[in-house]
Length: 222
Image 1 (cartoon, rainbow, N blue to C red):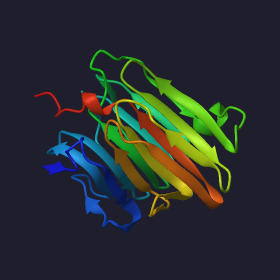
Image 2: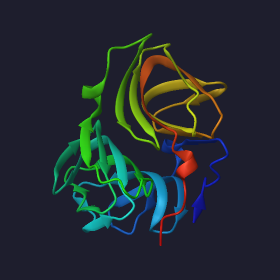
Image 3: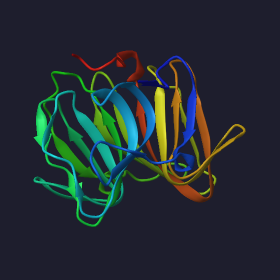
Image 4: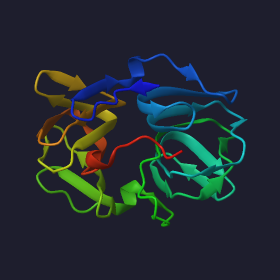
């Protein structure tokens, strides 16, 4: 399967307008944003766990990165409430689920295969002092990518000309970008060389952003 797999093109998806698609595990549904591959795929998705649903134990051969959007995600390593950022590198394993239900934004098979650094962060705890109405947390940075989380006050502007492409998810609030209105769970991917320029709406916005990573996009290894 290929979905939004041309990384030289601009993509905007209003994920909350998509139908939920069932996964192979009962009670776990997803909204696919980009994908290369079948059930083993380089993928970016929003995934919803119904209360009491669980995946079977598995190893993330290509790594897994996610943020908890609502509810509480759980595995044998602990509870991960809304606002948690998690990186499970290649070769890590777990048995995920949620007793009360949750929704996560997740990226699979997008790690450096030599990366073995596993961590979790409460994103709001990492925020620096605001500058011009924007408070930003640096969640992760390596030679391939930079991952941030930002709070924008009403009317605040966020711009980026980062090389290597830009990807942004609106966690809540709204953003105006040219003639487009980005709302809760809107996701945009801008190719190398395209500038990001957004302005927060009347109630501000919270956003997750990754830059620099698109030149490394490729299908999962066999």
